[in-house]
Structure formats: C-alpha cells, structure tokens
Length: 63
Image (cartoon, rainbow, N blue to C red; front, side):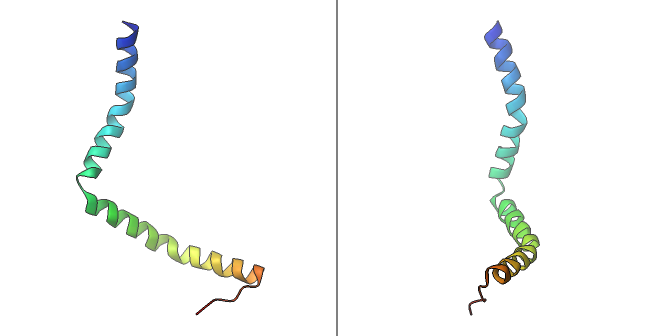
C-alpha cells in the first residue's frame, strides 16, 4: 500500500514534466526557434560584456 502511495505521489509530480517533454519532442522546430530567439536576445548583452572584459584585460578585438 505504501509503494502504491509513493508511486502515485511520484507519478503526479512527473506527469506534467513527461507531458511537456512529449509535447516539445513533437515540435522540434519550436525548440530551435526558441533557442534562436533566446540567443538573439542575449547576443547584444554578451557582446557588450565581452567588449568590457577585453578592455579590462587589455585584449584587442581580432579581425
């Protein structure tokens, strides 16, 4: 009986995660789009940070 209760508790926690995983696995283009969108949002901030770090360290931009 305890094993069954434990199974139900764990299953209730895992079910939404499993469902989301299955949903996303059926839409690979959505994941790629989200990754590209996130990268495009972060890129300007990352570039600014890298520029500041290069200035601090004294490394000039190559190219």
